[in-house]
Length: 431
Image 1 (tube, rainbow, N blue to C red):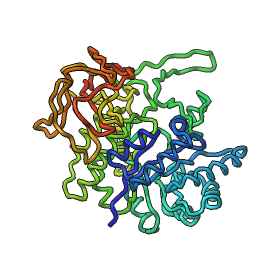
Image 2 (cartoon, rainbow, N blue to C red):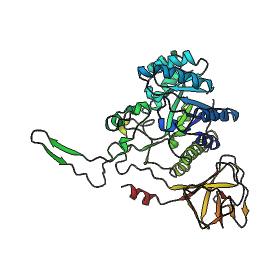
Image 3 (cartoon, rainbow, N blue to C red):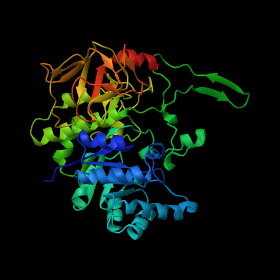
Image 4 (cartoon, helix red, strand yellow):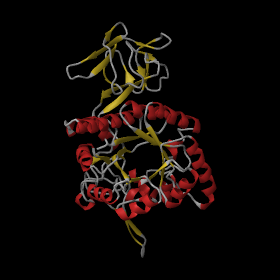
């Protein structure tokens, strides 16, 4: 049995490299045209996206291009040019959402695999077969699908690859088919510019049109008014069931607009879960401890293993801001001798090191600081002095400071530093 693929989001070139460094087999992303994450797409230029594809292929990894927007008639000619331009970069697949765009890709980008976006809402083998017969190699199933239905599709269409989402933001609407943002903000979700109106706090009113009265409805204590706000999907504890099914070719993480730390930790954790499964040492608690360090709106295991009507914990009515148990305090730059501050660092702080997979870390102790391993098996860094690349000593360094800071020793490129924060205090600030 072929090992399942781990697919991570790549919102820009740095996140692409981070995802690969921390365990992803493939990434997905694109430039802004016809992508359902326009804001993320703008972080990639055509040149940097090509650089990312070339980088991936040089290390034996894959890149899938998002062309999953819903074009209007006036945009068809532009779409054709975009497909040709993307195909010229030699990606490993094009992710599209509509039958018409599937047909265009077959015509304009022959030889490049086509993956069907989750926006196509495939829930059964009848719909899957229609797209398979059109030349689609892989379907990204609707997020509302059950594992049993995934298995049934695979039984009926054994040569069709099936990809499922296992982690990331959830939408209160069916497979993201939402128009709230379009109505309220003029930003069309299915055109890639969702304003996340579902995350807002709403006040509820009752009105009587006959005499024009309007009453504000008082909320019950602790219920809150984030009435559309979904918790984040987290299926790490079910990776063993997913892989045991033998029906899934790729597990996918959402989040092209999320932080570099999110890209690292999600790739790192799901890589660990996949490898642990194949090595017979699956440990769900370990994975949840890591994922809780990322910013999130609370977690739910969504609908893959439970039917929607069986779930009563998918909404977060208390707060919309994402909170986590750790803050990223630094990122090691390419020279491997300096880091950029992302939070705050003071002399004497003990800071945990999170390094890319298969990294070799050497312990050091000198006038700048120390790098050492503790009994828990983790590495830490402590600074005696905060010294910039230009040899200026600082009392401390905070995020926003653009000066690279000297390390006491060499650490691998894209290594991150993180410090624990009080989760309860962060929650209180969101209410």
